[in-house]
Image 1 (cartoon, helix red, strand yellow):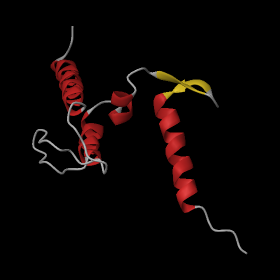
Image 2 (image 1 turned 180 degrees about the horizontal axis):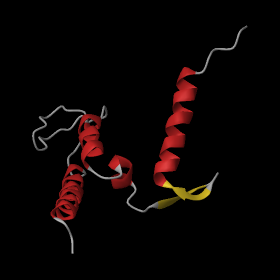
Image 3 (image 1 turned 90 degrees about the horizontal axis):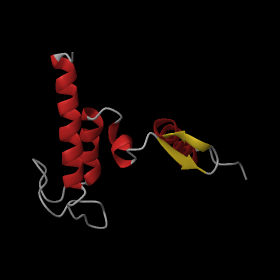
Length: 104
């Protein structure tokens, strides 16, 4: 038998997934700002601000919503878990942005 907690978690997942689908229908400009109101977010809100809220609320975060399959193909790693791949990409991107400059 499911506990009330389990039911609430599943309801939260379902609502987040439905809201994510609706967000996907909202047009954005070249800078990623929404061109129509979405929930409480006004026109001009950057979609990454909204993504952060989904990250907080949805189990697995935005990466799981963007890539609902638990595993994806990566040429370097064959089949790998989405969260692991996302973490590696973030670390690699951070390194590229912040690596020390080589001495002349």
